[in-house]
Image (cartoon, rainbow, N blue to C red; front, side, top):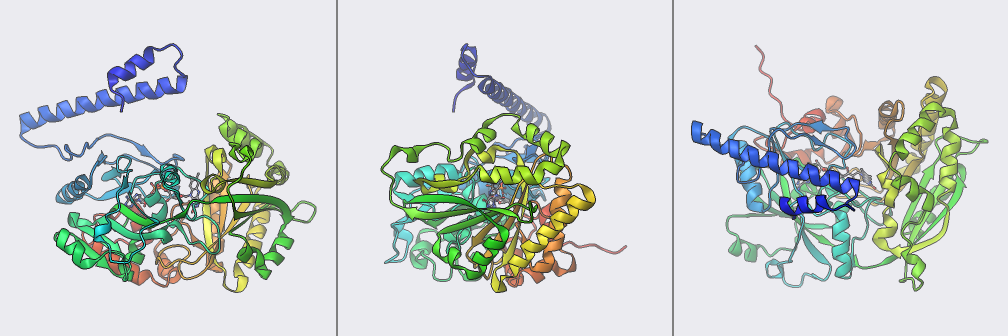
Length: 546
Ligand SMILES: Cc1cc2nc3c(=O)[nH]c(=O)nc-3n(C[C@H](O)[C@H](O)[C@H](O)COP(=O)(O)OP(=O)(O)OC[C@H]3O[C@@H](n4cnc5c(N)ncnc54)[C@H](O)[C@@H]3O)c2cc1C
């Protein structure tokens, strides 16, 4: 990390870009402010004899935290940046001693309030390194060739680079790589592929700091760690090999403690070929009912124009399958769709979009179809993670809701049909328009109790909205409410309005009580409760009648 002296030297250089200048200045002022706080804390301690909290763990006060899309803003009492697992233990214990709650932030790419806390917010950026896999703790015969151990804060982008260097790869990922691997897994984040579960499905072992600072290592009942070897080496830690605990913690939205590290199972490095073609919703429906497209393609995704043009809803189909390493250099082309990539790179592009969509909303149906046609591609080949990542399109400031539908009986197709009716109603009655297509991805069922795909293969329907779109949040809320009737489960990390009322979560998730039992054990003091756990009815609340 550069010192302030080095930063000042860089600032003096004539050629320094404006963005870098701003970030260097912000960094310098941040350091000065922090040094001043530490100084005044010391003075206060000297005068009053009271030690300020979290001094060792670099705790900062009077910080404003915002998520990536800036729709979640919080000013916690402390914003702490641990560097080791011992720091995490100390943070949890000190917070509890002061009656405070703790939440971890991965990279702040959730649109919902899952991260928020008013008390102690844990920045995990400095816990982002790979850890050497300790084979001596594992059972004899465990195949370690694809096992990887990393600290929780590692971002998917850095993880991909690390894996490629080791001839490995994530079996799957979502359309973006800026999230932390643990933050992503914690909300049930997924990619596409009916043979591929959400990110959490590659977990094999999870190290968590629970309440009281307890050091847990949690694995499935037939987990990879040898209990005798582990207990001999770490008598003070708690090894739990139990499916119920594992399936609770794997997708737990930060509610069961601070995950310090995870061991995951990767696959050997691979390449993908992506083909994108135009179709229409009636034809796609027939393909989905037949089911071959889902079985025959490793990844099958559909974008649907919510509005009919000339009586048909245009669709863009994306198929991705494994291929051998391309021999031609073009596979290195940086962006597979030049126009989308370009728009993502232009500062202010969102304002232009907003202007177009908000001033001329009736153009939306045509603009959406034209944008989809611009994505048609007869074959983009590259290393897996570059094909799976949507690239600079992710730079467009947007938010979304995503609803999970069980695929049993193809009822999800009726749900999508109903969504198209809702879209039409909003357009007709309120001039309320989508500014982008609806996306359908198909994901393998998951054992994690609160994964949106728990129990069966699932169609994930995402509704993205560009920031600033008129009525955007109302549009998402309208869909969520309409989709409960089709067994729709909202994505925890995306915009959602779930509440604990009417026993909604229990009705939605058949294993909720098993999840709750472990949650109540690991969160017995309420240390990891927050506004989200209150809203969903996870946190026990006692009200004493006067
Ligand atoms: C551009 C963009 C693209 C996206 N694409 C997809 C997609 O393709 N598929 C999909 O499913 N979702 C997608 N999402 C949603 C996103 O992946 C999830 O919301 C994800 O959880 C965000 O990860 P994060 O690292 O930012 O975690 P955060 O948002 O910071 O945190 C998420 C949750 O994890 C908890 N958490 C984080 N770190 C820890 C830890 N160390 N210990 C315990 N709890 C922890 C937090 O407390 C919180 O509850 C996308 C979001 C954006 C902004």
